[in-house]
Image (tube, rainbow, N blue to C red; front, side, top):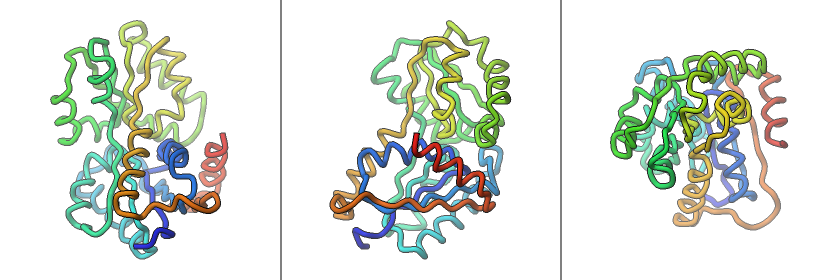
Length: 251
């Protein structure tokens, strides 16, 4: 693999941009291909077999483009398919996002915690292993059914209504909030409005650091030259998604 080949990133929609933004802070000179699978969004309510199938199709397309590393920027895809993909495609490194629940254990163990994630992530074997390993016995697991889709739409009124209905009962009762879906950091301010003063935990900065380490270890890092490029692909060819993606990226 060549240092100048692209890093591929995929998510069920544009939520993975929160991961890309963290990656750009530590790897600004790389070429990136971002794939938004909005045609099949959301992943959280699909079967394991279907998620594996969707991920496999995306990975095959990336491999045809000679990508040097693949970032799974979707917590559900990571929880359900990361191991499957690593076993099937042994020649390419996969860097997978996961809910930052261990960070609660490391930094705020005694505080009441709310984990917000998709139903698929919360029910996954991978997350349950993480949860039971680092359980602080003061944690609420909240499957936020449909929230990623509403964030994807970008309708602020719908987002506020959803958060009020689902989170208001936790106001004053939790101190930590694990953002277990890459869409949720996009509405962090709105979540804080409903819950009050809380500390957020997000796995994206740690994924970015790990990706940098993997590329350097394999001598694939492109740390010289001009600023890198970003190619955006949406499976439903939605021009509005593309416009919103680059608007968020520039914020």
